[in-house]
Amino acid sequence: MTTQTIIRLGKLDDLSELQQLFVDTVSSICKSDYNAEQIIVWVSSIKDTERWHSILTQQYVLIAEDKQRIVGFGSLDKGNCIDMLYVHKNYQNQGIAYQLYEEIEKEAKRQKQTLLTSNVSLTAKSFFEKRGFNTIVQQTVIKQGIELINFKMVKLLVS
Image 1 (cartoon, one colour):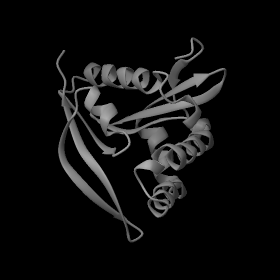
Image 2 (tube, one colour):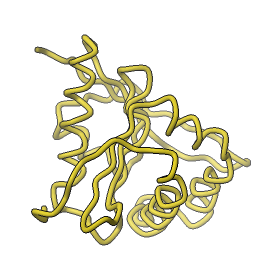
Image 3 (cartoon, helix red, strand yellow):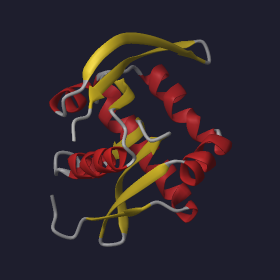
């Protein structure tokens, strides 16, 4: 991880940069686990501006920045669900996801949560397993008639 990486709270002004990072990352990093049709459907979720607006206004959102550029972000929904965790395609394997995850887990513990859950892509599954998450069930999500596989994962939190 670069020494310039800082973690800060997300704000509504970050919206377009987060959406671009999301599209670029999913389109590039996930193509070994999902086909082109699945990726197109997945990234089309940026059109749901209401959902993206509510992520930034109702969830605990953390931004990783390097030289004033957003290089990753993560969000905690309802205190115990990791809704999003993405790192820019050019900043993979630098510890940024780990740093975001650690801060999200600290926040969940601060809120006295006893477990964390997440719906995790095939691409991110091993990352979550390394953080102590276990798979509860493999899920098939159908969006626009296209099947996407993900995993409901959970981790018990101990103080």
